[in-house]
Image 1 (tube, rainbow, N blue to C red):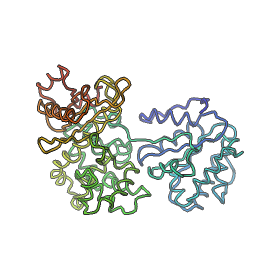
Image 2: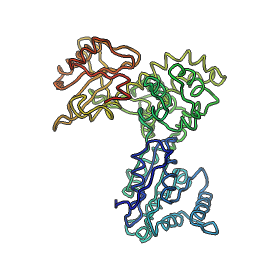
Image 3: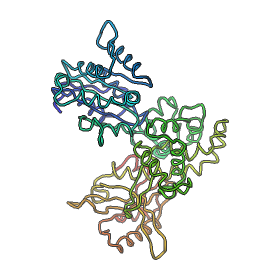
Length: 494
């Protein structure tokens, strides 16, 4: 990519997104001599359209947002908006998408111009050949491309569809110079975005709404909890209130995905996961289906970014699954089983009954994931004696006790030239003060791992909690025997 000729200033009202903005502006202002293509994706409500519209405005580019319409209507709208952009006295008329794409290429005849086709999957739904049309238009030796410096950005919210645009046998494979996924804000960014300084409250709010920016601004209209004592009321007036858009949002997230056919089955899979059935066998058993029946739904849900699959750190043939979108986990564990009561306005009664489930089935697993995220993205390089590379969970068999031990945080990483060192094993407790007993259990697990041939000479035990540590465990930390991570360190330290 060539050197950018000008700097594009990020809008003042755009929170964070510094990396995404720098990637997009570098692509848009690239002084290269020919047209280039980018694919931008991310789940709905993450701010993709805001980013791309701001990019087009800042660089004097063209932004077109598609919606559900026939091919003829979409081409008519594109012609009208393109005429307004170019100052043409009459609407431009396109009979075919081949002509429309060439018109977009012509916009970059004199300078690099970002051109955005937002909600691209809507266009392809009624013109399935559109990716092939773009492929032909961006042919390596095509004169229209060589004479253009259009920076065409295709954007969409269906992760499975957008991910497939550049993979396998897709016509656009190898054509894009940029592939950008706009992720939700991480848990630290989300706390800052919501203006929450109390780390316990930040964690509770994140376990409901995650890091999706629109949920604060558009969905709850800036209604943020006024301290930890307001959290219960906040849940009742937002996520559990039929008057709030947040109440129905979890159901719409699945509807956005074009690859989802039997939505009842997919919702049942998500509900089984929210109940704690984290393996394919347990999910199948809960739904009274065969394992083969849920293989495809699990794959699609992973492609959509709604489910996370984690290989077991110590058992290569075993994987666990977790709902990746907090609002969906909350909805399926708390709201969906009690929808009838909630629809009748009985949110407070429902919440009073559901709070134990919220702590065990929602916050507990979510906090575990935040601890793994902290290790992967925020822990200082020296925290575990090496650089974390792979952070997951694992199961260790205990033949002597005829049982097994779940290890919540397993860290493998690099020490010198070795990139597979077992750096740490850790236990996570959300609502329990951790003491020396947890450290002794981790030491026992290390003995089991050594007995099966695992090199644990550099492995550091770690304890993560939302409720604090005993003085005895703090003393062990002072002796260098354990790494302790509480909410203050999770949200503010390395």
